[in-house]
Length: 77
Image 1 (cartoon, rainbow, N blue to C red):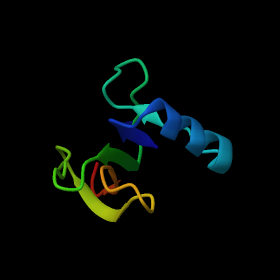
Image 2 (image 1 turned 60 degrees about the vertical axis):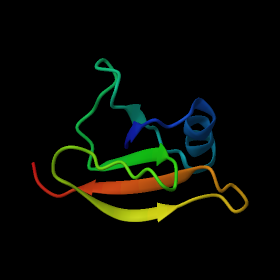
Image 3 (image 1 turned 135 degrees about the vertical axis):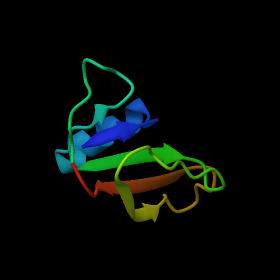
Image 4 (image 1 turned 90 degrees about the vertical axis):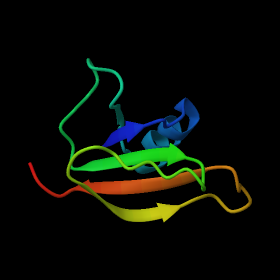
C-alpha cells in the first residue's frame, strides 16, 4: 500500500497489527505502483491525490479530532 503523510507510529501499527507494509510516495527509492493509497491529514484539509484515484474510505480514531485518514483506490493504469 502506498502512503502519503503517514506518521512512523501509524506505519508501525499497520505493520504490527495488520501485516500491512506502506511505501511512502514521497521517497523515490521506496515508491511502488500500488493499487491503494492511504493519506493522513486533517479533517478540513482533504488531499486529492493527482492521477486516477477514487476515495473509498475516510475515517479516524475515536477522540482524535485533529487527524483524518483517507483511503484511495487506483481507477486506471
